[in-house]
Length: 355
Image (cartoon, rainbow, N blue to C red; front, side, top):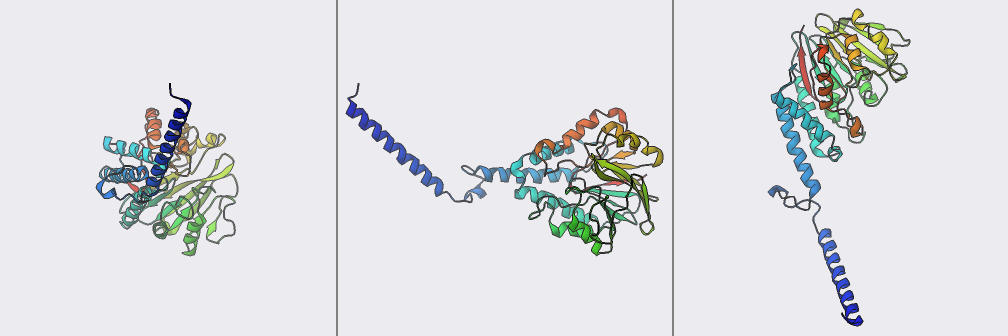
């Protein structure tokens, strides 16, 4: 056994060594450069965030390449399925939400879509899917947008202003389903209005903002709006998200096909009249929110020939409500008896529909 004085000296010496080591470690960390000096050498030790950002960049790039090689079809290929599931994983990791790889991915796809919109449509319809529940339908005579939003915070939207406003400039009219910010954007609405292009909004939204922004559904009954210059007729059905007015747009493009967009339709009482929609309208393509109430029953009520779901991966939701592509896949696997093909699309993609 050590004498008390010797033991005391050993304890003091050990404590001093520990303090020196801690101070040295802290000093070394403080002296580490903010930017990884060995990034070009692909060495990421002690820079975990830098590692994750580089990994996301590689993954987003590879996913984009696969999705271009395997575009949307009625029958999904295995590479496309794997790409969408991989995209789900990236978009459900909140570390990526504000990082450059995510912004580069979505804006690259939106820029490519903007360029593709210059291609004329000779027959039928071309349907583009944008962020969240935003879609554009282009025919030979008309290009209309539904729920066009940039997404993200005001100081740094997901889709850059330089792209989203050019997309808006290529459209003839815009229809907004309901008042929520992931579907309705006053800046984009005013961009349409300033060009003399009609914006149709739900009851109570943007009243008095501009004469070109109109609320045509004042009562709980369907309204028909002819657009002779666009060779189409718009049918507005009185849907709801819970108690919030939610216009369901049935867009009849004469000679090309009819597309219905449900917005955020979710209401128990509405399901009753939705049962009979197919008796009033011959819908070619239905664009439902991927979590529409009583999904199989609602889809049967609309009775379309083709389904293209929207609202997957809403990045401003928590990850448990960022509805994944794989969840939509699972839902349709369980509804095989429905007999209606589903084309699963992601941001910036298009699908050609012909009767």
